[in-house]
Length: 337
View 1 (cartoon, rainbow, N blue to C red):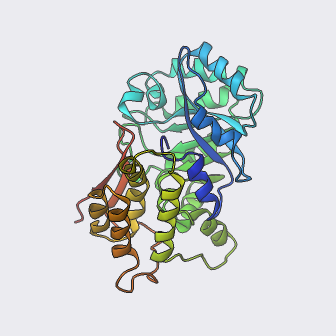
View 2 (cartoon, rainbow, N blue to C red):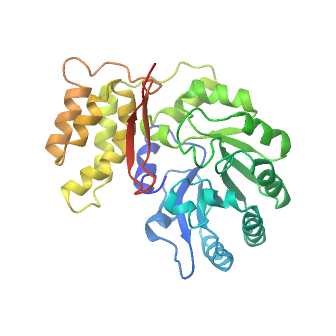
View 3 (cartoon, rainbow, N blue to C red):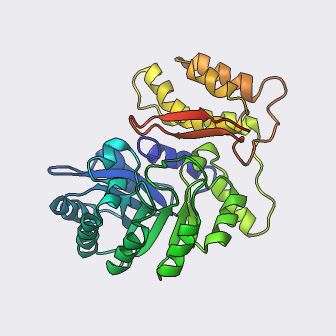
């Protein structure tokens, strides 16, 4: 997730239980683009012990070749094409999810990548742009170009992060393709991960937003698969997690900027703190470290709350999703009937 899942965040997650693979933020590919040093550090300085996949976003064929050649000088586990980003400023430039509006263009890009990537080549995609119509054609292109593995976010681009994903399309892809297919979209807990994998036949799951909300989720998934009792964090554990997130953001010069950056993470965490979003609303009004952590103390450890279990699932109706215009995060309190 852009501006969120960087190397410092990977290092924090590493303290709670790593995923099998990390994916970088996306490297933007365009004429005269360079490898972003901040994103590249999540490959060159990664000390988590886990492999890292380099994610690309763009549509310029010669520049895709050039950037792949540069990336493969580094220890990348795979090169991944982003065909799913739902940000309007991305898809309007025929990148990310916009590629699903032009399968001819997608065909050319996949062919260029397959010819350029010497190692593992993967794709993350959505199931359509504003309808499901492009799905089968896109899957045929995935097969045609020998993509090594595929991740599917089971919503259309226009659906963004709204509503329940259409997991049946992941099942369809599993049946159509002879490569590992990974399920993405609203994987909220270990129980949900198992349910989606059983429903779809997927080889695994990719988790974005809910790994921010619950950094224990990868450990819990492994425990669930082994029939073990799941790790149960408390609100006091969440308070410590937020402090670690704050400490990792010491590259921000101004206190207010540092707090604003931290809010990108805490917006997600707050989905499981209280069902009425009081914590989120109070946190958003903070601009100093003192005020911010006073709010954390009030909602997470004061009044005998420290030992309260942190819910495995987000509270019903509280939805966090990226604000796709500016890369920040918004919380939506949806109506409940």
